Image 1: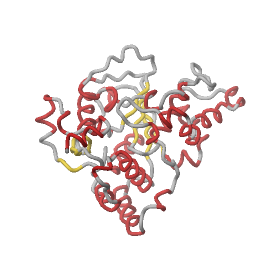
Image 2 (image 1 turned 90 degrees about the vertical axis):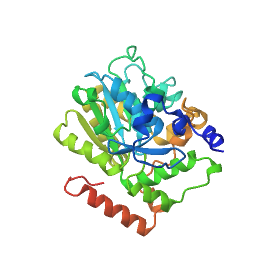
Image 3 (image 1 turned 45 degrees about the horizontal axis):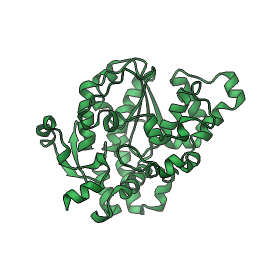
Image 4 (image 1 turned 30 degrees about the vertical axis):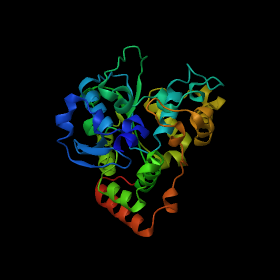
Length: 330
């Protein structure tokens, strides 16, 4: 039965049999909890990861060499990663790929255009050859900053960080995991999953620790880290797009502003447009996930439709305790 269930899962959710020999002693010595879907989660350097992600993180730590010209998108899971990838890719490549009917976003998922380090490039213990990538290179990751490869920390590369308020983050993660969980395995209740999230047992969790690490760094090194909140981006997309462009050192020219380039990019990368593209309605990633699972609603405040008063109070209490003294409000 276990083998049958494993075969139904996307590659990155497979169980222990996919562990490379060189990682077994390390990984199986780590604290372990049940995962949200099928795989277990292992606690490494203070954060929880599925086995396949964890192997990718360790391989990435050992082999990824950042360049000063690199840009890396770091996000908490289910915080608008797909949207951010689309925006930054389009922004950085707007001279090479004008917004016309042949734009790459019309035929490829943002996750194909901006690869994840830990579960795309360095997955399955592979060491990719990145020498052919044009500069500046653009990568994405959910790896918390404390586990980011040392070359990233020591280089002049820039980081764009995006997080979301914890209530919407949790609901989106719960909905996402429910879509991936094979029906044969049954469902995990909202209450049970919330308990895991509050204990920090979620992919790249604890959520609050992930956010606090980068908040501290962004205050010390604003030239290296741009800290963004999903809710703010939804409320003021044009302001934030200009802010991202300035940070990435590709600001909009007067001519671009006057010709409506900002609005063009936001329209192309909007949730409504991306979610209705054929590639995102019917296509799949190489890791097995259907592109459509990355597009649910993208709304701010959807947690009100799912969480009880007691659940909201619990999350708010933990958030207040965790963020106390940081100056951060989520």
